[in-house]
Length: 340
Image (cartoon, rainbow, N blue to C red; front, side, top):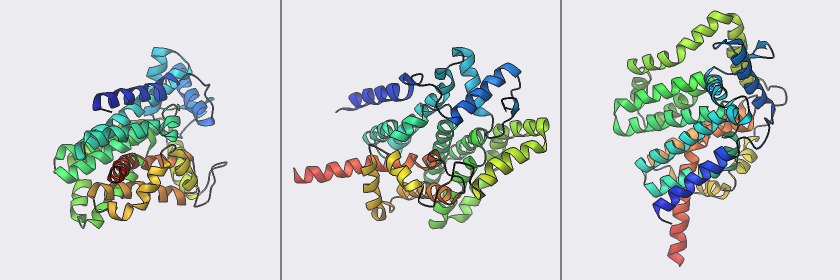
């Protein structure tokens, strides 16, 4: 299959898996219903800072996904397609981000395979069609991590500033997790590479901090001015700190919770993930494989010890896996050709 043909199949997979099925089912779980109803109430009460659910404060997530859903329902009406469309668009840009990044650090063939694996993976197909914040957050986490890695390799400040911007938008999408994952994963990577001074130089880049604050801070300040300590108690304490330290009702699980989630979630490509694990010791000699592996395993371990467990949390670490699994298809093909 040549490149043009592969691009056509990738486009078709995105069209079918992300868009054509958006309105086939009703809003089917608690989160979809809560996000969509909160957006509908925003449309009617014209409060574009604070979200409400059934007339009560809803501090579960920051504002960005509600704004995007609001724009969508104003254009397409109040229906499943409109509520889910921002997630599908975000997933599309997420897939394109994987393509362009992988093409830059590897080659176009690996880039196309990586994006195709992402688009056709079971758990991604579900999250890309869900009227919740996670598709958008995953896009921003992926873009921030890609930008950080490119900065480390090329030392061009524009990539670092892009990273701060994407982290800012991620913080406006789901809060501190958008800061924590790039910060901790990068710290571990640079600790291993013995570049801690460079890490702190990156973190305290003044222009980057200003960009982050311009993007993320205004809504947080406006929300606090509207709701005061209720915002601190509801968002910071209950939906961030408390979720980690104590399990929410119906969201419990043991330390092994995410093992079957990953193996099932990566279907039909789980065998490629297992191949990656088998070859991990040799693969991490490559800088990006080390960087991406730290990214995945930090997310996996952090949410494994978290009190509250939801299947989509582990997806925050999936992005590098699609690249690694694409590399595994190349290795499997090489082995096959050697015996042909």
